[in-house]
Length: 259
Image: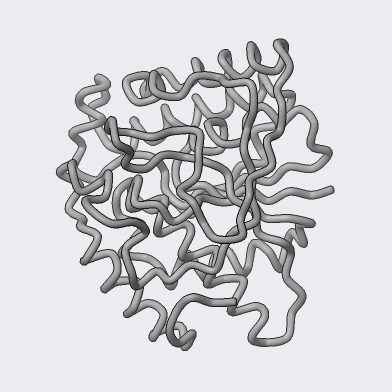
């Protein structure tokens, strides 16, 4: 079946679901950002003179990881929003995802949960949920929406490989063989520019998936500080929620959660 994975950055798809890629008959990847922040700090840290050169390096890393999984890199497309800025493009993301679903007709869509790990992850989740609601509003059939894990704030700092609890949403644990785990380790190693972050993401024995709950993007995903609020990314939870409320109104969707 055709699976559409909508991810915020190149490498998010591998973290969440990379071990399954060789098993999928028809995979389409759709990235919201190009993985390169506008300020150029990440590019300079990795030795690139421009943001564009850094974004191109991230595309090459993704292509190498996909080839290891036996996938053609042409299955990956991008909206090209600068890293850390997706929350300012919520209506654009929603319309883009809706068009991607219309044009590819996937059997299932997989994306991020709304967990406050990265503002681009939360913006991507908003965009996918909003896109499905836009399609349903005009009577179009929509595929099931599943979530892959990413990261969020935990008691010891970053929590990876597991979801925040959601009522009625139990994850399915997709097992990885030793061979699949080794392949996933090699895939993650392809993202040379991201190794400082990827050290928190070992190739574990399972990849969790769950049916996405109906989120209210106008309330915090959990009590306390969000993970991304500890970084100088120009975003707070309160600001994100205000942007989500404004985007929902602009899209004519009304209040969340959307069923």
